[in-house]
Image 1 (cartoon, rainbow, N blue to C red):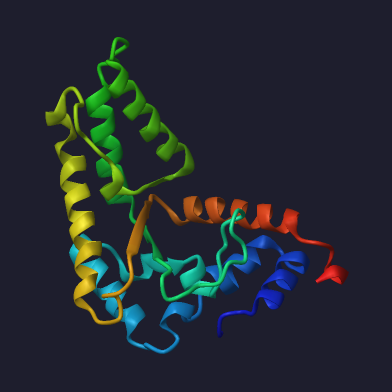
Image 2: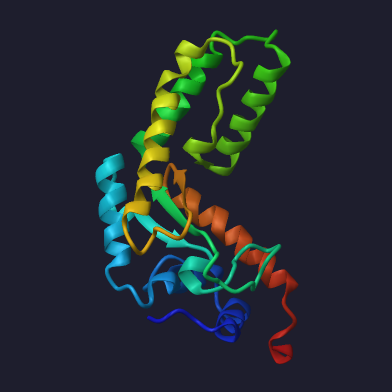
Length: 210
């Protein structure tokens, strides 16, 4: 299925269940960003799956790179351009739990007298967990206490960074920033993205006003 036009997407969002829109437009079909580069999606999946040891089927392009316009409620429907990033979802329980378990080992036994920097860092990680995803290469560690407990996260962060940075070696990605977000399960992915679509739908005029 080719990427939808903005009008088609609006109509689908107003007349069909959000789950159907997610299935048919957000998580399937050839990405808009690769419409003139048919091998790009497979190259991306092969590279990321090999580097991170994850299933290729659990790697998808999302957002404006997938449909051709932003699916952020704040930016919908801003067009995908030559300067736009490519956003990638990676779903893997083992990798996610590696980060989660290291967080628990860092925090337990429960420490109630953490320095301010540690408390703020812990609060940011709790927010990540609440929404069901991590961006490993954006996690920072400077100045934290008990750094040895965080080594698995540091290793994951470095591996994640190297994986996505090295996509620049492919001509189709050399001029774009490719960002990855790690989810634990597809249910986490669907819940997060479905909420974004519901927010967009609330902003749209009734079907007759399209």
